[in-house]
Image (cartoon, rainbow, N blue to C red; front, side, top):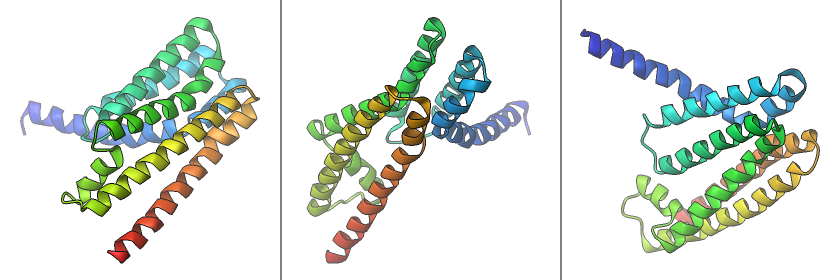
Length: 198
């Protein structure tokens, strides 16, 4: 095996290891902030989070995804938040990450309705390229439902930034994920019913 091939293989292996690790760490972001406040100096904690975001950005460039450009934008904004937190020496800036994520997703989903096809339709066509008209109408409805979710979730995430760390962590690290899971499950059940009718 050539040196070039060996190096490429090691690169793929490293990416395969770092990708799930960075995803999990970002998902645990609220908990890291909560427990880091009292135990880790601000510059170190923010630098670690910035490194995690940067790693995720790098590993994302190795993948193919319909939402790849959206994720890149979110990660860049997250890095900007980290920079602001370091410059102004304020952890409070970091609390706006969930608000920012919901804001970006809302803009992307809304734009996709006016510059079709909608995001949900694009994702649906990955599995069903020849999506029927009923499916197209359904995906537009689901896109609007997610827009409503991002508005509500983003607003609640913002309200928690004005409260204490415990409430912020509880909502953004647990309740928000739970609501998202309920929406995913509800949409899946509705989709099965629609498919059964057709």
